[in-house]
Each structure stands twice: as C-alpha cells, then as structure tokens.
Image (cartoon, rainbow, N blue to C red; front, side, top):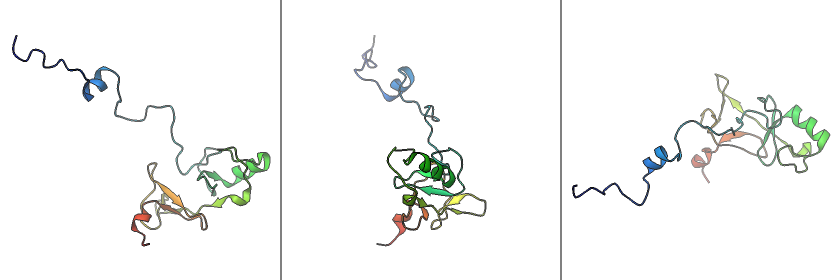
Length: 136
C-alpha cells in the first residue's frame, strides 16, 4: 500500500476511457447508413447529370428528369412545394483538361467536400472560397 493507491479512482471518464471502454465516438470512415449524394448527380434520378438545372433551394436536377416530373406532378420532388419550369436555373459547370468539374476562378477541382455556389442570374458555378478573394 503506497501513498498513491487510489490515484486512478476518479469521478469522471477520460476521453480515452469513454471511446475505448464504453462505446463512445469512434474515428474512422462513415459508418452511418446515410450517404450524401455527390454534387454531380441528379436529386431525382440519382444519376450523373449532363444538362444540370437547379431550383432556388440549390437542388440539382437533370433537365429531362425534372421536366417530366414537373409536367406530371407540378411540384418540387425534394421539398414538395409548387414548382414550374420557368423557375429553374441552368447551371454552367466548367471542366478541366482531365474532365473534372472545377472552379473557373481558382482552378480547384470540386470534390465531395467542396462547398460550391451558383450565381442565380447567370448560372455559373464557383467555389465558395472565391468570396474571400473578391473585392467589395
């Protein structure tokens, strides 16, 4: 019996104990059943798009799929609100030499972690980081 016999008896759990012994948060790949749709896929048919159009909420659709859906149901397939074809915005993505979508200002390729924005009047698509470099 030494002076420090109860040194490990504490009234709280350390991060290491919580993660290893008690099933706490584990680092690693995504294990959830939910996976985010890639930015270059249609929200309606879940396939890569060729002619991308976007609604005001930022949901991207393939032209043929969304026109057929609007003609039949007259609503937005994601939100369920009323939607007409005139409110859709044609998106202009830029591709680099290897065929990947990229930002035309920063020339950075888009990935699944990229935050992209589109200008509603023109439909041009940029990286959100362009705001940091633009002048007021």
